[in-house]
Length: 442
Image 1 (cartoon, rainbow, N blue to C red):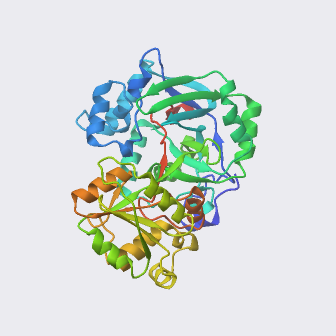
Image 2 (image 1 turned 30 degrees about the horizontal axis):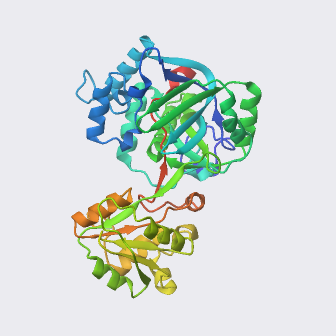
Image 3 (image 1 turned 90 degrees about the vertical axis):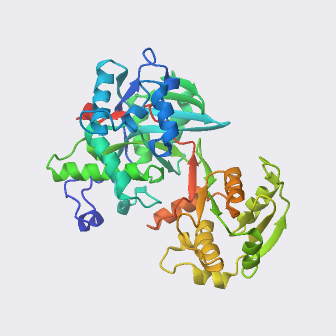
């Protein structure tokens, strides 16, 4: 390790915190469910931050060993806090050998969801602040979720679920991931959302080749910004306590080559309640080329042709599809002078080129004179959801094309942050396939 960076030093980070000189994914002794003692179908869960109250209760009731009992513990379980209850449960599951530790290694983790296969490496990532340019965030974080995950980490002494990273690969690490099919499967389960498979890599030459390959790369946080901020906060706390180097200098991460077995990238659409389509289109005509497109108003219609027109237009420049569920219009070719004036001059060139930035700073704020806040501009992950919410609120859905991974990475590399709720990387890694216990690495 080269020591603390100038940026880290200027930020007041303790000088003994190690700073990796590249992307370092270390082998670790993973903690896994014993399939002889539990049904893996019943104990996995989505990441904590996408589990709503209804799904949480369903998962808690599904199985006494569902991982949600750890990641979203019941606050009414005493004594102590919900975090204390999670720690007691984790210890009990280990004592009962419901969870059993492997020897050190990296894991290849594969998900097949809706016909798409994603595969990458699970390991203990050496932590690096954004200023060092190795692990790049593209979203801002909030204090509340970090404090919540930090309290859980302190109580359990574990990384219960990984962050999700993507990188531009093509080397030895990618080759090792692709070769997993030639190894014995460590774990395999089919759940309601698809198939999950796991392999362990323990062979020293393969691990060395992976380490050498990754050391010259950097990665983008696709999902888990609050968890990564928690890793960094917990690391700093331990060093400020004088504990020196330890397992807190690493965090559980899932690393995927975006060009090989990579994730799908979906857009997150916008809904403007109460804005009539006719008024929205009339105002947009002053600064956009507006084209009516055929739209099937039948409930559940996929409208693939209209979405294909949006995708084709987005390849040429900023483009948005407006619909109220009855009709639809394509907005293209925004006035370059007006658009340039509307986009904040202090933002990076990469940020200013994002279609979602144009939507918020130009279409919403300047053309429609809307405030960018909850209730004025809402969000929907699926086209059908956006359209139904537009219909229910007598408003308009603003459909966007997905932001390419390279564009997200360019914004992160410029030290900028995406507009909120810009991009959805899927599938997200399931929680419960592998847990990292810090105590096992002490």
